[in-house]
Image (cartoon, rainbow, N blue to C red; front, side, top):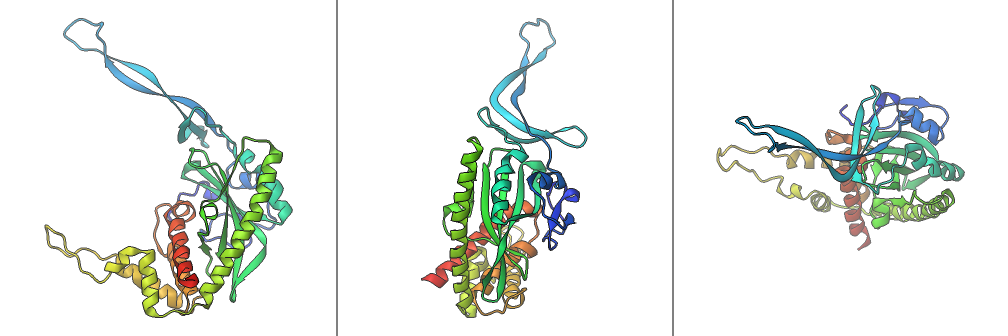
Length: 339
């Protein structure tokens, strides 16, 4: 399977095999330091100032031959990097001089202290793009329901070493029957996650996280209420089609033949097979019955998580296009059942 997971041979998971099928199964959930070690993330991040090398004409030399000399100029920025198993530097990102490096164990230690008190357990961990972003997925002790569907509640904890995010906590859910990750967009905070200040004292961080967990619980309850509305809302084929077209606007042209303006050759139609797959998921996807808006929403989540090919699936599904597509799908489905 193509992926950009770091250290997939060192990954771990607790419980059922995760969707990516990688890692060693553990019987007992680890703490943060154990999790980082088991996932091969127990490395340090460094920061150094950067400069550029410029070739300039050496005007002090007189003669027919031109000479060039190299000079170095500071950029005013820094790069973050780590060392791989061969002691070679791996560049993680370019950041400002004010950027403060936060090591992996430092970033996740407050989560360890608070989440365990709330009954959460670490289920899997990893990194994407050579360690630019690291993550731990923590599972809540309770299970939720949408109709007869069992839903597991999680908190995704992640931190970046390229300056793209701070230490962030994001609630998410997984539909057990099909292992689809359910994204929801209730507000900006729940959609993007809750970033925690990691430059203040530990006590402040713990207080912030405790408050954030309560906010997450409220968002999850609201999302589950909306999902139950989706489950109760039966729809016909025309509504299903309209919903898929709103989520993926290119589907509106799925029945139109297109030709190259110069060669006049028929262009490939990617929209039609995409629509066919979504329709199949709606009727026959894992746990679906082909009747409700809940089935339509999960047709999209199944397509994003399991049917679409990615060069870097974890980055796309967890942090990129896939996450945004599912979040948008929820927002549109919500509109159908609440207006």
